[in-house]
Length: 58
Image (cartoon, rainbow, N blue to C red; front, top):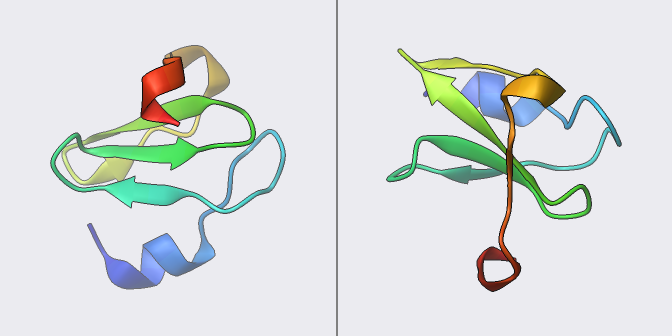
């Protein structure tokens, strides 16, 4: 994942900061409780593609 891209990406819903989870290949938005997948080094920033976070993942 390109570090420059990570610096400019924000959550498409709340415009908040995203946390990069390298092992899981996800970008996490804690306020929205969503994890956006990264497929082939491309973040998929669509709400319908995001995975809801479980309480223990926050």
